[in-house]
Image (cartoon, rainbow, N blue to C red; front, top):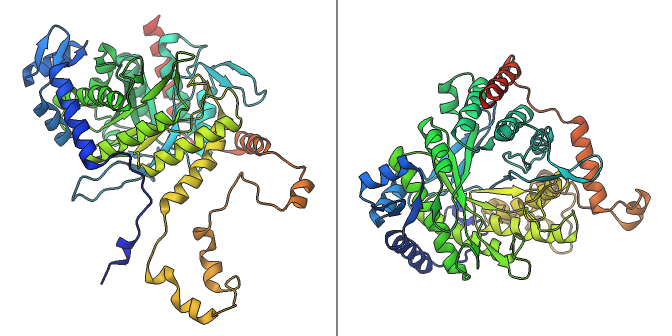
Amino acid sequence: MQNNERLHQPPQFSVLSDAQIEKLYQATLECLERTGVEVRNARARQLLAEAGAQMDGLRARIPAHLIQDAIAGTPNFFTLWSRDGKRSLQVGYPRPGEPSPNQVYFGPGPTCTYFVDPDTGERRLTRRGDPGLTALVSDALDNIDYVMGLGLIGDVTPLLAPVYEFAEMVTNTGKPVLAWAYGPDNVVDIYEIALAVAGSEQALRERPFVALFATFQSPLIQTDEDLAKLLWAIQHDLPVALLGGGTAGTTSPVTGAGTLVVSLAGALSGLAILQLERRGAAVCLGSVPQAMDMRTCLPAYGSPEMSLYSAALSDVYRYLGLPFMGTAGASEAKTLDLQAAIECTVQALLSGLSGTSIVHDVGFLDCANIGSLESLVMNDEIIAMTKRILRGVVISDDTLMLDLIDKIGPGGEFLSTLETARRCRTEIWNPKLMDRRPWPLWLEAGAPTTKERIQERLQKILLTHKPTPLPDGVAESIESILKAAEARVG
């Protein structure tokens, strides 16, 4: 007799076969051993040399066994907690034969230069307060699972912008936060703020609500400061996300396969360094592999290639049993329009169907240059639809309802049955933005457009939503940490 649970197969989209994945993985191992990567951090070079990598100045040629050992030593999933410790995200893929969660989580991205003012609609430089607004709106949206700040604050001491951003985010959301940093000093400040919120090192270690986001550079460069801050973070048991990826035709080969090799080589070389420093460190690898628009010489952030390449990397990382961070909910549109809706929908759906562990950059416009709260609200609805699709169709004796069908019989109706009333809210998705009213009722309501409904929902959130407050005294501790950082910088 078949187990009913096994008959529930969530929809899944695969770009690569196992044979293609293995060929791509072996090509990446060959690239790392033959071409190598430039490693600009002295501690990282020392770790690689002692482990048997061939060193030639800054160039490290990494043998396959170091990469394979790093993969074996990396947890296939890790947990990020809400600030109150009551909710959690299980980030990762199961390895063959190992049970573990395989959820897809969505959140904003970082460091946009510009921000759409939620009151005036103008495009302006990102300023203090904007990451707090992003965190507040993310906190209120059911389908935004974690928080990043959307914008690079421009009106504070420049070297401390990531610290101010984290302080605003952790104050305005109870959801997990992905922080970024310019260097180790920023990471120390962010860690001190997180300790103030958690109450102790042990509490933060047991239920981390913050992870560090950092990058590698394409092609094949690990920078000094990125590695330094990652090494500091894992030494203090903070989960980390290491993300990079080539732009096809400029910083990686023009072919999709060549771009995937460069992206994987950058990520896996970084993983080897981190696992040599602290075996078992919680690491999520990521990539934004995109094509170059040869007409403008700008990365095509909304291109189908980016979604396709990201989905291919989801296949690879699932095969390797490693958590993967991808991208969705971003558009090259300059304002929230039909282009933005189309690009964001394709990205969210492919990220969901490919099973990407954690998805960032929700809310980006203009090729990652503008942060938009309106886009965040729109994407919440798109992600809700995606998550409903990912639930699939459960086939079981209970859901087949043969007894009910027999009871109602030919020509009957199911609307008035108890089963319909009991299940309709879980079986049938109901929108918060999409308009399903008949034409006369829509006209009677003032014929609101989708964008108007988005703006109305955004303003309601900004006026009424209250995040979980910080523990007593923590706001004052955060302010003291910021003042000390200002004094140190200058």
